[in-house]
Image 1 (cartoon, rainbow, N blue to C red):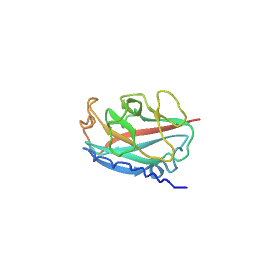
Image 2 (image 1 turned 90 degrees about the vertical axis):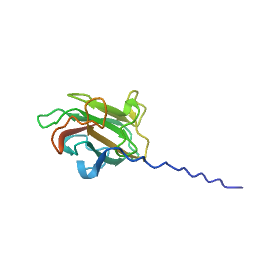
Image 3 (image 1 turned 180 degrees about the horizontal axis):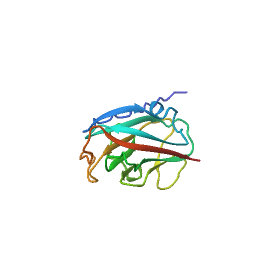
Image 4 (image 1 turned 120 degrees about the vertical axis):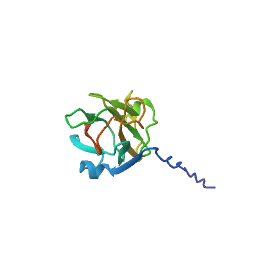
Length: 156
């Protein structure tokens, strides 16, 4: 009997046109993805750059959402994505959002319609930059670094 081996090659990520910072989800939230069930934390983002939180979906079953909430310390419109590449802002509409005051990116692993689908055991990035609402490369933040608040909610 002959054995067939299949090798899957994942193309490398194209470099982002923005400079960025990459942090591990576990360092930022002090918990492994998909935790925490609910938490808010301040984040600093380079002006005309991005922050990417790296996580692995593992064998997670469930769904949740990521939001950048409006606070007095927020420096303008934010553009966020869930992607397999850091600094990637060119994703399908279910996996991106421009935040003014409200809204979120919903993630799911169980077929929820209208949410960004995460494959099991895959590395992802929650990418956020400040924007003018038209392009992720045009910042609405006048200070450096720019400050916002991330909120993660896990829904089971």
